[in-house]
Length: 235
Image (tube, rainbow, N blue to C red):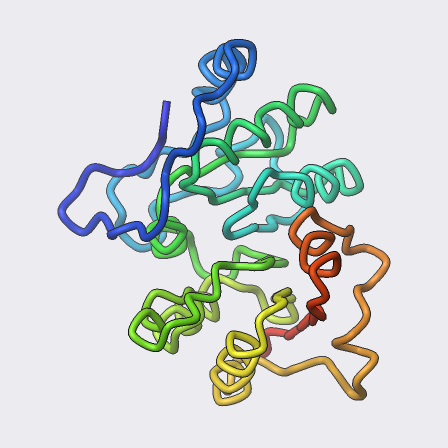
């Protein structure tokens, strides 16, 4: 069942939480496995979540994906980095079903899922616990009146800076020029983050350890260019 705190500061989630009804087999898998994978916040106070307690053995590092879609990127990274603990945040329950399926099919033991607003979890994590954060093809909320719904905001970047280790990496992908400019403006204006690009190829080319997702394939099929932004957290 969905995780997440029931307290008065629970955030408003924009967009859908459900799409089409899950197939019976997928729903049965979610019912069976999600309770063991889901993260429930104890009280939303800063530092309440102990990352080491989420996994059977303490991971060598902790990586977080915000809005993992159907989960193919997170599952790929988890397969490639078995010693690292992965947390995926996704309120869209059909996407959660996709990741649960991949966790089962790939026999992944290093994945945990938060099915509520990622900002709630970020505020409950201890300082300097994340080695990498992914935000891949988020909803760009293109209308001006909806820009406040974008995840990249000054306040959220300050929260990310608190929970990311010195030298940790933030990866952002988008096919929306307006969102790209928005993200670059805010991140380059934040002293806690350094853009790792030195030339155009650095943000036009996806690194080898960054697998293609269905959103990227769709964007390219529809003639849109994709950008891959990498930032390093520094204290």
